[in-house]
Length: 283
Image (cartoon, rainbow, N blue to C red; front, side):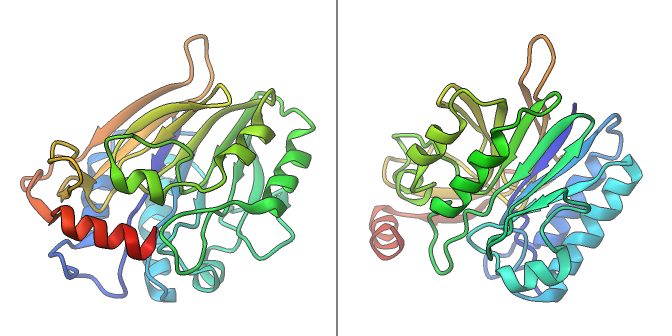
């Protein structure tokens, strides 16, 4: 099983630079162009912050990523993120699965599919109007029921907000998943082999209840943690991950970086005061 893992495309209503002079659609096109030589990809998973609230933006995501995935012969699976809007997401992408075998019965966009004997579950950690994420009792109970029957090869679970964070990042500690303990209780001892997430715009690895957690870097930009404590800097650099959840040495994760001639240019930089303001307002 080989998964191409993308996250945080942040596509706008129209092509062109955003307020921070980044053209999100061009970043995605650049990355997909760099990945054109990939082979033997079984699934493409995109873990949220796909677009703004317009149907047109979600349609652009579907056309760009969907067209690329068709060249690989791989299905695409999408999750929501904190910047997504469920109504527009649903109009264009439905549950986020091309042919789900099971959908969550509530409003959240969560579903189950099977790919090559592997069970792929997407969850919805979006809390409308908030930067942090939460799965909630309903989804966790549903997930527990799904996992009560083991899959043929194992299970991959994908959602937006990481249930882990770095102590050196003030924003990560308040803007991640708010109920990781509940998720840990559900997956402990199950056949879940890996949790795939995004949101932090950088690569990060950790464990939750003994299950590997992978945070893939963003497509639109990446966070540079070489800044002073309490500050934040984003730089140009579209990235993705190649994930192999099984095998004798799995799971394995490899980060793929687009060759951007403007890579590492500062997109935005927040000093300590501005970072504290954002945490106070949204945390």
